[in-house]
Image 1 (cartoon, rainbow, N blue to C red):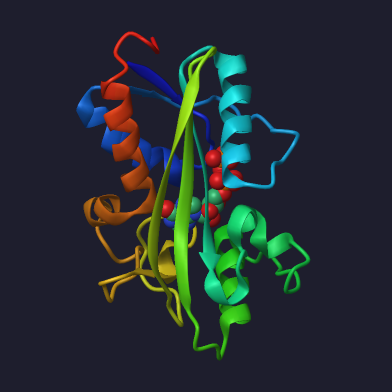
Image 2: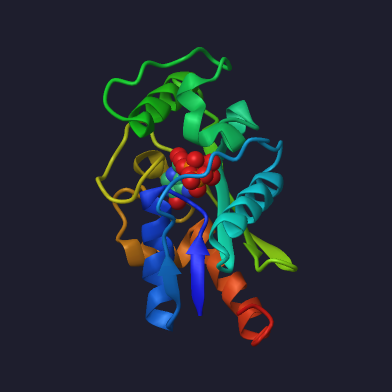
Length: 203
Ligand code: ITT
């Protein structure tokens, strides 16, 4: 089955590829980003908007991912603003010196500096859309924000997120370890359960 991933985030696409391709799915990457005009106020709304927009452009059954990190001490932030947290007014803007990911992390660590409460969670909503029907699944992983970035693996906030039960960040864990416990890994496995039971419905 061909599936278009409604994302231009290389880190996300790599995770979809490494879980779905060994199971026989053909993972298709969009050639260009579609600016989804109406930004929703929830992960579900945003995932739904992205799935619909990419499906309309490419005509391939489409899986959209809207995700983010929520730090309890500043909840619901970074939240739905995770990818552009550095640039929003909340907590003051942060200059991009190298990458947006680095600026996002710098701002998060600044806002949590000296705070005891460092608990956080990654959440994702995956919305699968095949034209006249679709469904969504959710995934979450709880953990805490480290004092300093650690590890080179993964993407986004991975270097500062320590999942519950571990002392390493997602940036230090192997891809396989991350997929086993991550919000996205969990959601993709729920997606697979549903799609297995829907043979012939989405082609
Ligand atoms: P698309 O809309 O093209 O998919 P995006 O990066 O803008 O790309 P989102 O709006 O869903 O996507 O933002 C999610 C952000 O949350 C992402 O940019 C990361 O900063 C962060 N994020 C989500 N999942 C993550 C993960 O597994 N590890 C680290 N950071 C993650």
